[in-house]
Image (cartoon, rainbow, N blue to C red):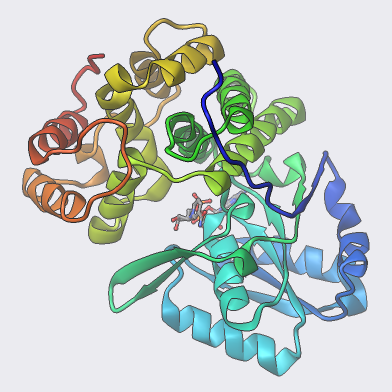
Length: 354
Ligand code: NAD
């Protein structure tokens, strides 16, 4: 029997295909924008400049100071830059950090965003914003920050280093895993999640073997789109809460942290989410999805433990405290003992038991 559900489709246009960044000017015109600002990290400034040049007079220039965790100082600086240039929209070329900057500008000014994702993080598919002020990262949901259009061009991901491709792919898989047992999940989201996991676990080993193969890159980006869409549509649980705490408090790297924690969080929730486990069995072709994800991540060269990422035993206690202070959605009861067990296993890279 189908369980009751509600589902709200998010309004956005997606264009997918190798070379589709050439459609950007059409997209800008379709939205009626006349003066867009191209956002990027310092590292991706060259790409941003190319994109800006391709837009001719539709672009007012490049702001290439996007940073991880969206610091408020950068946001204020970018907002001043956008105002001075008279920008009426933003083009976010990059990963979650760049899209995050576009969202922070949109939150204040309501300016539309066209995203050209270059990682698998999935921020472009969500109305979730994040902002860091005085060392504290706040997040929230607001429909104004959802990109109006997303152009997925796999050619833009060819330069993503293999290591980051793997961990960013696992970051995407984590969205789908938690969407499968989200309190506000639905049949359509479960279909997308299952297919997203299938696409990524197929594509990632192929990318490790042949990183410049555009077909494999396309498969991974397709999976990332689906997984990102599930993130945008549902409420995440224990896994995302732990990663958010570890990233925000100890500055652990985002994608790598998701990769290490996911198998342990899934193993913890496994006994209470039979439907999600069935979907993951179908997607992976494996009987024990949590153990399989762990094995696959190690085979593809991902970090083996939170200790490898810089966490210490003392940090585990702080995280237990922070992650159990406020209640949040999770299918299995969250207790300090359980979180301590889970984090200690992830700290040491212990075998995953499910
Ligand atoms: P990122 O955007 O921080 O990028 C990491 C580094 O890789 C940057 O230096 C970037 O310039 C570089 N890079 C990106 N694409 C590249 C490419 N194709 N080739 C070469 N280098 C490339 O990393 P991320 O994992 O995409 O994003 C992480 C951030 O996004 C975190 O702050 C996270 O909280 C946020 N996020 C937010 C949401 C949301 O819904 N709001 C969702 C996912 C992630």
